[in-house]
Image (cartoon, rainbow, N blue to C red):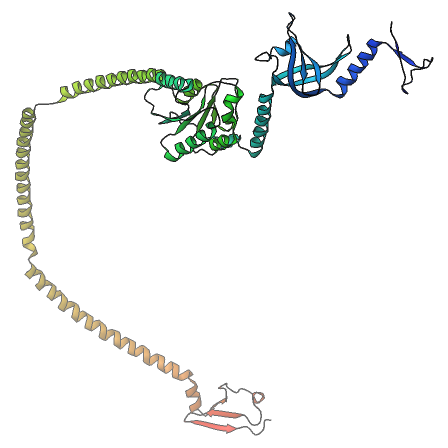
Length: 455
């Protein structure tokens, strides 16, 4: 068995302290170091020496102008590659760095393979997607609500592609009365994106359509690339008209799908989503028609029954007039009788009042009242004179009594009344002082004096 001597100082000298590895151990250690430190990498190069044994695994060499490396892609991974590579293809690999221990060959274990051109487009796609997402162009709050049902549909696609035929076929089946405007554009190539942007601008400017379908049939990433252009994405995002994106097949996803108001997996599905089910509507209308017929029948039956009832109650106008004439005759007889009775009663009352009013002749009443008034006047004069005499006698008696107790009577007997300047009666010498002015009232006059002293 071949051996190699290994130590940390790279010396090849055999000593008991040195660790000796087998070739298998060396290759295994190198493999672990590579797989641990390099992990997953992306490598671009040209395919050569491609082989596919019965196991289903792929073995090939990836090279460029200056170097090459062996590669393996196992069956569970290469099943996902749509088209097997061929000699000379330029591809992009996502791979792990490893070593084939049996031969010590350094190699790549490929996990994903794509065309190198597609890889560049994919990277551009991811970059634009992330940038627009960061700007918020994919936010649900920016999405328009689709009209249901639309009054006028616009379709922006190729006028000769399968997509327009699929859309029109579905519309004819589901909602044939819907007006459709087609905005013809190229859907792949360098001219496609500018034409799609111009068509979107035209549709928004005309304002005839209230819903747009933008899309095309399936194809490769390069074929679908116009719908990943930033100008198209921004035109869709800025559209005032709601837009359904219908690009490619169900597995194809473009930037247009993210900015549109709704993504449909296929153009046919877009037409399905955009329109109501005409057959379902017809069934619904048929149900409404049946319901209205039944309702109308019930209404007519009810009205007929009511008409029959009213007809039974309805009288002939001649019969009704005859009955009313008879009622008028009865009312006339009753009225005449009532008037006669009223007149007879009034006549009787008048005769009774006339008999009762004779004793109450106004002339007699006036004469009697005059006589009575004369008697009452004489009585009043007598009573007034008697009252005056009695009051005069009482007044004389009261005057004599008043005079007997009056201060004036006292003054006539030689007494006087003295008042100070304030009008107060002086009862004591203590009430005055020298210099006070006093007024003394006598029976026949008043004396004013000045106090010189008091004792």
